[in-house]
Structure formats: structure tokens, C-alpha cells
Length: 260
Ligand SMILES: *[C@@H]1O[C@H](CO)[C@@H](O)[C@H](O)[C@H]1NC(C)=O
Ligand SMILES: *[C@@H]1O[C@H](CO)[C@@H](O)[C@H](O)[C@H]1NC(C)=O
Ligand SMILES: *[C@@H]1O[C@H](CO)[C@@H](O)[C@H](O)[C@H]1NC(C)=O
Ligand SMILES: *[C@@H]1O[C@H](CO)[C@@H](O)[C@H](O)[C@H]1NC(C)=O
Ligand SMILES: *[C@@H]1O[C@H](CO)[C@@H](O)[C@H](O)[C@H]1NC(C)=O
Ligand SMILES: *[C@@H]1O[C@H](CO)[C@@H](O)[C@H](O)[C@H]1NC(C)=O
Ligand SMILES: *[C@@H]1O[C@H](CO)[C@@H](O)[C@H](O)[C@H]1NC(C)=O
Ligand SMILES: *[C@@H]1O[C@H](CO)[C@@H](O)[C@H](O)[C@H]1NC(C)=O
Ligand SMILES: *[C@@H]1O[C@H](CO)[C@@H](O)[C@H](O)[C@H]1NC(C)=O
Ligand SMILES: *[C@@H]1O[C@H](CO)[C@@H](O)[C@H](O)[C@H]1NC(C)=O
Image (cartoon, protein in one colour):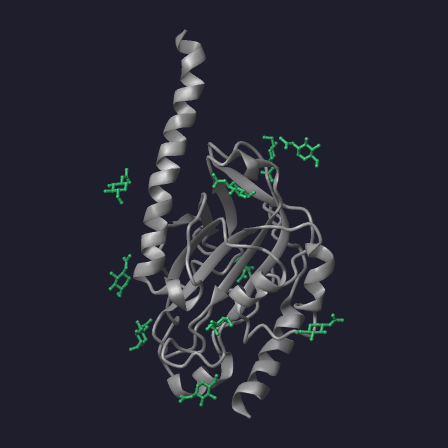
């Protein structure tokens, strides 16, 4: 009898926790003004776990909403997991977006939003009730650009959102974001609306300031909150391509646009 009950109890506990904590996430988004700065409203149906591995120490960093991180912490593409008691989501494919609404600075958002990740084709690799890694099967539309706010800037709010992927996403997305689309001046709400993504099912965010505040004036115009990094394929597979050369191109493009 106990054996039969236990799984049900475990499920109920996970569901209750997820339920409780999603309202905590909503509160954190509201408290940080991400509602309304990034989203008109936010009612997640699950918890998005974002885990970074520090490239220097090898230690993992579990992002809780509003956590302060360093640019060193967030150098490498994170792994993401979803916990949800909504069983319909188990069979869905997801789109992951990471945006910076505070570029180049929270006081001057003329370059916002910066698109730090845009990737579809993420699928749950286990039980959503217990929380499971989302594994990527297709190349990212925009590969990971590590957060790197300009010297002198106040910290930025890096916002991670997960949407259910609609049927024709892979075909439709290139009309809105492709190789010639700048990474700045993005608007995730408009993007979601145009592609029929609906409201995000889960989200998270972290805060990161510049590595140093030296030579503030010139850096603010030059780097605008984004920089590129080269990465090898990770097991989460959040895309494989090396983007150093694209990144350099983007930084040059940013310079031209932002300085002119
Ligand atoms: C659940 O949420 C309520 C209301 O936000 C809060 O008072 C409570 O501490 C939370 N419980 C847990 C375990 O997080
Ligand atoms: C991560 O660390 C390794 C070894 O120190 C280094 O070769 C690599 O360039 C680092 N990656 C990034 C993105 O800085
Ligand atoms: C993050 O850092 C800021 C400034 O140092 C501090 O006011 C805030 O309480 C910190 N937030 C958390 C969640 O630790
Ligand atoms: C579960 O997720 C689906 C999206 O796949 C959504 O349409 C539905 O409203 C959600 N159900 C609940 C109870 O939130
Ligand atoms: C999940 O999707 C596959 C392929 O569309 C389908 O065959 C399967 O029945 C679905 N499973 C559930 C639980 O909806
Ligand atoms: C840089 O200066 C800004 C503005 O004074 C401050 O918010 C931020 O915490 C500073 N960053 C560092 C790494 O000292
Ligand atoms: C590429 O994206 C831009 C928007 O950045 C859009 O104007 C253009 O039509 C897209 N190109 C194609 C071939 O869809
Ligand atoms: C994004 O677009 C929406 C709808 O047009 C608008 O209300 C919102 O202010 C825009 N957000 C940013 C950061 O530009
Ligand atoms: C997906 O799940 C399977 C079975 O649990 C496991 O062997 C595999 O390593 C997982 N994939 C990733 C990328 O973690
Ligand atoms: C805002 O930042 C842009 C770079 O994105 C810069 O060109 C502009 O001068 C800045 N405006 C103010 C008022 O500082």
C-alpha cells in the first residue's frame, strides 16, 4: 500500500513546491521591474533552473531569481532544466531566450534588448515533475554571448525565458532573426507575439555588473553589454558552433552603430 502511495506523494510534493515557487519567481520579476520592463505580465507554469559552470574554478552556480553573479561566473553557456506539474509540457519542445534589457546601462537602454541566446528545439530529457534537463537538438538561432556589461555601468538584469515552441518555429524564425539581424534592439515580447510563442512558461534572471570600472567612458560606447566567446559543445547542447568570428563582427557592428 505504501509502495503504491509513495510515487503519488512525491509527485504531489514536487507539484506543491513548484506551485509555491512559481509565485515567488513572479514576485521576484515584479520586484526587479522585469514586469513591465521585459514582460507585460508573468505567470509561469514551471520553474526554470539555470546552472552555470565557472570556467576558472569548475564550480557550478545555480541561478536563483535576482542572484548576483560575476562576468566570470557566466562566461560559459549555462544548462537549463524545467520543473513543472503541467503534464502537457512533457511532450513539448521549447524556445529559450536570454535578453539584457539594460544595455548599454540601466539608465540608457538605447541598445536594449541585447539577445544573448535565442534557441529552439529544447526537449525535456526526463520527468518534468522531478525537474529535468532540457536538451537541444537543433542549432541555436543566436548562440550564447556571455554577459559583459561596459565598465562604469550599474549591474544589468539578465533575463532568461522559456516558451513552448510552436509548430512552424524553425521556418518562421528566420524572417525575424537571421544572420543579418543585429543582437541589439531586440524586443522579446514583440518577437514572442510575431512568432506565436504565447506567454513564457518559465523564467529566471540574474544580475551582473562589469568586471571592472576602469576606463569607463570609452568602454560604455564600445562594448554595449555583449561580447563573444568561443565554446565547445556541451552536453546540454545549447548549440555547438564557435562564434568567435561572428562575435568580433558583431562587436565591430555595435561600435559603428553606437558611435555613429
Ligand atoms: C510559499 O509561498 C508563500 C507565499 O509567497 C510563502 O509565505 C512561503 O514561505 C513559501 N514556502 C516555501 C516553502 O517556499
Ligand atoms: C576556459 O578555460 C580554459 C582553460 O583555462 C581556457 O583555455 C578557455 O579559453 C576558457 N574559456 C573561455 C570562454 O574563456
Ligand atoms: C546584489 O548586490 C546588491 C549590490 O551590492 C545588493 O544590494 C543586493 O542585496 C544583492 N542581491 C542579492 C540577492 O544578494
Ligand atoms: C499546461 O501547458 C499548456 C501548454 O503546453 C497550456 O496550454 C496549459 O494551459 C497549461 N495548463 C495549466 C493548468 O497551466
Ligand atoms: C508526444 O508526441 C508524440 C509525437 O507527436 C506522440 O506520438 C505521443 O503520443 C505524444 N505523447 C503524449 C503523452 O502526448
Ligand atoms: C561599477 O560602478 C557602478 C556604478 O557606480 C557600480 O554599480 C558597480 O557595482 C561597479 N562595479 C564594480 C565591479 O565595482
Ligand atoms: C532577416 O531578418 C531581418 C530582421 O532582422 C528581416 O528584415 C529580413 O527580412 C530577414 N531576412 C529573411 C531572408 O527573411
Ligand atoms: C517591446 O514592445 C512592446 C510592444 O510594442 C512595447 O510595449 C515595449 O515597450 C517594448 N519594450 C522595449 C524594451 O522596447
Ligand atoms: C538524457 O537522459 C538519459 C537517460 O537518463 C541519459 O543517459 C543522458 O545522459 C541524458 N542526456 C543528457 C544530455 O543529459
Ligand atoms: C546612450 O548610449 C548610446 C550607446 O548605445 C550612446 O550613443 C548615447 O550617447 C548614450 N546617451 C546618453 C544620453 O548617454
